[in-house]
Length: 383
Image (cartoon, rainbow, N blue to C red; front, side, top):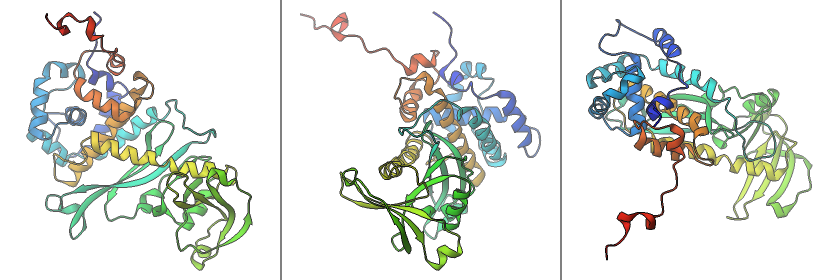
């Protein structure tokens, strides 16, 4: 039988330990660490993400139970008090930098979205990570709520979040969304929360297409009407000019308004885009595919630890969230080892039960079909 490192060890292969230590030196405060390293912190927190550990004591106990397997990772068990102190005091910016370092390798993976066009396709959205106002007063959003906002630009071809930002819950979605620099020629889908006429003009100048919804009270003038095939659900296709004083002042470009009736629900939609080349039906399908970013948020909230936190300070919370996103990248990177069609969410669930198994990752993610029970003597009824 051939020797295999643990599934956890194989999952961490895309991470360069040299890069990690270099970043750890850049993002360090205070005296030299003695009883544990930032690598020990990362291994402990990443293990907790993948195996669903609920508390610092739980993390320590599981690391001690797997001590003989941590040796091959270059790590050692870390005491819960030490882990709490590192999460509290040592800058979370280390893991933000590590995320983008790893992203540089992961985003070059081969992938393909569902559409015929070759342009990169992204969905832009933000989701609030709810916190207890009593436990996390620094994250107060309203008098009765606290949260941290996670903004993401998700690549549809790879299901990888290529643009990520964490901000206060009371910050408008547009603040972080406008900072993302989408590549020339790409197409970005987002909801009405990102409607900003000046930004529309900026995206158009950068040759980035967008697809969004038209606000109900938007004032516009129709410049051109195109013929449509109503059998596709498209009810209108127009070139418009936003004519309100606000839109003119903000430099809104000429846009395309597409009316659409969903054949399944009979709901009516009005889409807005600066893309004049793609068919109206394709524009509607692009907006519908924006659901992918909602599935991303659902996957990380259900399978990673970003709802229950093992620290209460802002730095500890950001540390845990950035490590969760790094774990997501590592699992997404390992998808080439999984069966075709497997989602990152399904892989996370399988890895949770096999993290310290000494088996090839491809074997874990491509299990053999169960044997026919009729051929198993122990499954036969004794006469």
